[in-house]
Length: 264
Image (tube, rainbow, N blue to C red; front, top):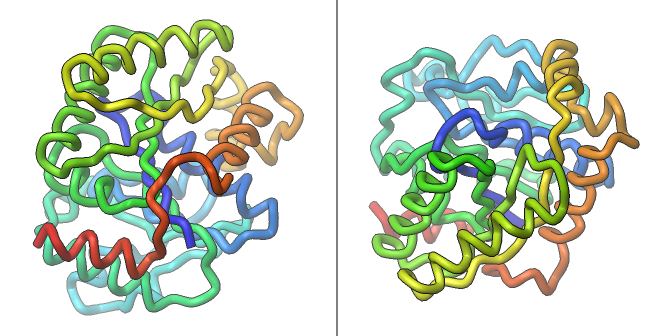
């Protein structure tokens, strides 16, 4: 199993869109994929997947349901562990509660890839979950505050968790050249001030109308328009992340639990 974390320094840059479509792309390839909506208090992955959720992790915390009972099988072939929208309690879980969540997921069979869609920012919930992943994908836009917040997040991960392997994914870009420029600019700063070389995950082109249509219909755009530019971008990102030589920590969901345990 590979555990892929998707995060960002600020909200609204396309993090959940990337996570949902990457999960769907991998499921289309015949892999068993589970998506953990790690933005537990403000979750919306179920909207992009067109799935109705009746129970969330809030019911697990209350002792009303088990992890297995809240998992939703979606039309995209992705199994979703849903969070809850508008729950302050879920947005500020303790590390022990987070560990309990991952322990519950680790007992579920038939899963080749776990994708963790964290909340945005540098709160404890975000950095603990993200740092424990095998592959860590930081989503960024070509916008000053997005770049600044992405760097702030990378700085926290390096200083507090000694993370040395991170992938940068520029989104909403107009050309491959623009994406490379963003990557090189951020990587130059992290090399200079953090002694940290970032991996390049690929990029996602700007197609706002398709993304909006996809969200309205509840169909990931890799299925809605599989030959669109951004669908081919997701395919290339999947190829890169799933290759054996892309420079990520090797591990499994048990390794994920072990790393998470060390932060308790």
